[in-house]
Length: 358
Ligand SMILES: Cc1cc2nc3c(=O)[nH]c(=O)nc-3n(C[C@H](O)[C@H](O)[C@H](O)COP(=O)(O)OP(=O)(O)OC[C@H]3O[C@@H](n4cnc5c(N)ncnc54)[C@H](O)[C@@H]3O)c2cc1C
Image 1 (tube, rainbow, N blue to C red):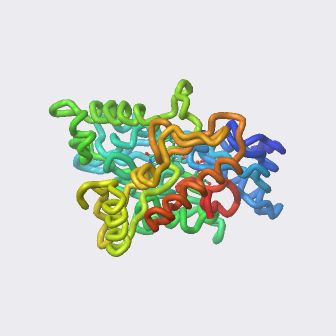
Image 2: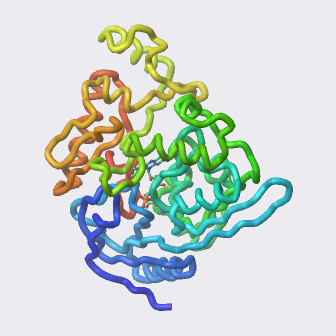
Image 3: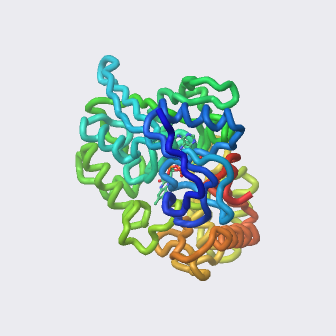
């Protein structure tokens, strides 16, 4: 096998934000074997390695990325009956996520139907335990096959070893260590669709099938510019830019007090929140809007999506510096009003996989 390594490759077109500089060197790997070969090539030369999937949750620094950017393009879906109604679906890391959802729903396999419309590739889904409309990949994840760059071995991490949480995992915490080669899910043939969100329940037809739920979720997401659509003016984004903050009871009480004092809500119950164990998960989009930042606001070539306060968008001709300055000012405004610090969801593309906002 010979790897087609290129130098000085612009990364903006490979990401949904369409921002940032070039990769010092770049290789697209089309199989798991090629991926391992590229990793061995980088190790032999002491090159820093950065993994790129579909580029839908990353921010590329304006100065570009040093070392080797490894774009995962390996394809392959494999189904295995495991007894009863259970079916295992193994997806190579470069498989487009929507194809994985399609493979499940079209075979009447329940478990991924609410995760339609999420851009990117299968290999990235366990990294932040991708989720939407009450479903998370972690609900169905069996294992992750990965190359461990520390021990230089291909390993299999079972679900527990992935230490999944809300937009969190060991793979994300130990960024740069694991290169995901494939993911395996266990799905239920003929299983009932998951309809946990009121918004989804209200929009679904009576007795909805898996395909109905998938179609409905997709339509709901489209209205919020949460699917990739070349005709959508909000299309250059990474989806939600901030995660929903999980806060303790004292912080939640302070948020409620601010909201009541400022007349933002009439009653405590009107402050949106979701249960999160002993803690409370707040709605970051609500905090942003109530802190006075409107949907559709613009600061030059960047702004807030006109469809969703949680998504920052690039309108073209901007820089990553401008995007991150806007993100930092939104975070500062929310913190000044509510005393809650928002965390960025996308990662800064680079060997360390750091959060987009430190
Ligand atoms: C319009 C829009 C809507 C979105 N909606 C949602 C949503 O509803 N829920 C949600 O959870 N996310 C959502 N996202 C975020 C994003 O789509 C997901 O996080 C997705 O899983 C990222 O996949 P990717 O292949 O594009 O990863 P990339 O953006 O390429 O990479 C993300 C991070 O994962 C690392 N990585 C990628 N692949 C691998 C691999 N094989 N091995 C090791 N590391 C890897 C990268 O180095 C990087 O740090 C949305 C994004 C957009 C643009």
